[in-house]
Image (cartoon, rainbow, N blue to C red; front, side):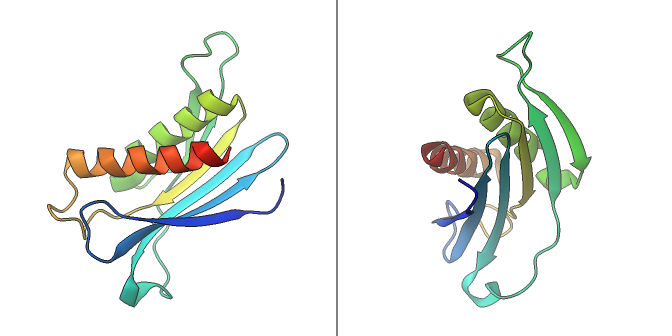
Length: 129
């Protein structure tokens, strides 16, 4: 499948902000981009977040390898975890770009809010693969 899949889901603990997902499945790689936008900023440009490349390790399949291609500290850990998860589950090289902002969540981006968003994004993306 070469056509991108574009989806959105509500950002947990946020009133009007959504997470937008752009997923492209190629024969030999997965390309995934994530961002957030509220209703009033839906047409505005968002800053580039982190961009990570992950690939399955044939010697240790439980621990995929990853390389940061572009790092932005607030999004780096989330991006790396998601890239490794997708690479592990699909056994395909995976590129993940992420500029999700948790600023509009109820508590401004606590660990619980970030983990809930990670769980929802991972579930949605893996259901499409």
